[in-house]
Length: 65
Image (cartoon, rainbow, N blue to C red; front, top):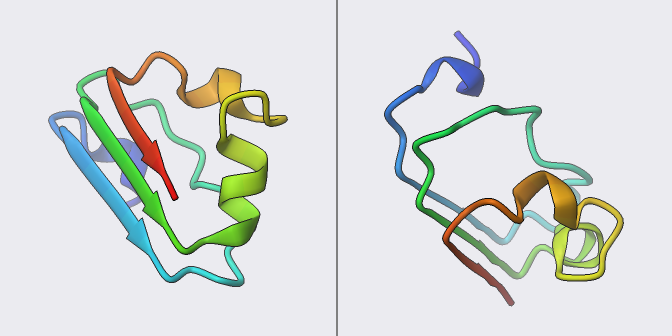
């Protein structure tokens, strides 16, 4: 079972994923909060203005540090 099957997930948190390059391909319409901390590759790609920002911009609360 992959993350895409978690249809009711509302909160997702990634921390210290220094070698993680991309978020799992996901379509999580219920996701309300996405927090990414100390994941430099994810920060570069998914921050506002980043290459993949459009994939997560629909999430109401996003914190990427």
